Image 1 (cartoon, rainbow, N blue to C red):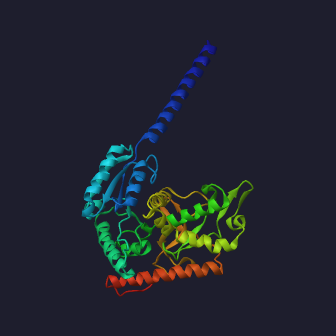
Image 2: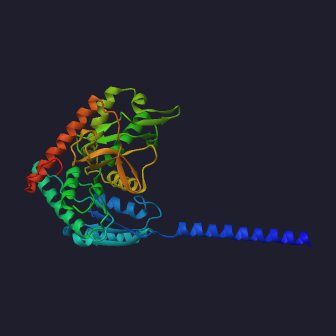
Image 3: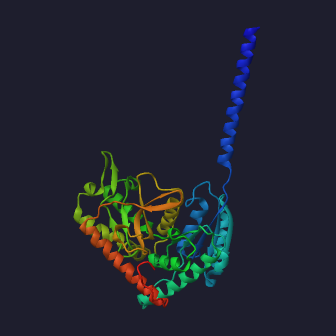
Length: 373
């Protein structure tokens, strides 16, 4: 009898254990399958080339992950209202599971309402016969107006990525006229240049692009940018080694490599007769994804962010630095050794950004040119 009681007790405990384990499995699966609240993502200039490449990437989960629903806000000018409507129709027809809604509008206030992420692609392109100041004047006016709309209508913690050129200075103007958006939440795209550097090095070394990491783009998203390989590494069949040692050609790294990355956009325009669209859209997704979800351990990326004086760069400028990201926040990588060659290149691109800032402020009739403004 005692033996039977013991067996019965054991059976009951086994059953209870199975029930408890099953419940834990069901609970875990439920939490995994439970959909998150949709994130509202604004794309300005959505009917353009980059926008057309970018919005399906966002809707597919490339930007925010395969389990993050999104509501797309798409803004463009009135002249492109029909093209914008066509894009909305295509998004519906694509039946993206993560796409929970679309706002397609030519009204900037409606477009900015409640957005959590803003990708600012719209800008005025330079045309034949236009002076640099003319282009700057057009763009600072656009970004002043869009900054006011974000300031008034976006979510308080909205993350902003400026893509349109001059990207660094457009971001600087947006920061000035959207003071309630945290300064750390306003960035510009240099990830495209970062990715170009990775791609070019992987081709040179005949390795997969994922085997190369920790290049740096310093400064402006322009022909003065400085692609720096001094801290970059490559993983080969013999282990990890510095890129400089793997390339074994300092002259190439200091000349052709730098100019190729700096002038890649112009080379693509020459080949396609159109500007970079697919690669720019992909880089924008990379920028936001790493910012929101975090960078891999031991890896940094390049982002145009507000300078805090790191590496001797004027505080307040939107300057590309190496950064790591965690829990939705970026941090500038500190303590990297800067040689004389790098210092000269970093200072040259900083000088251009200071000149752009002064030109932009003059276009807006602003006279305060202090280092912090």
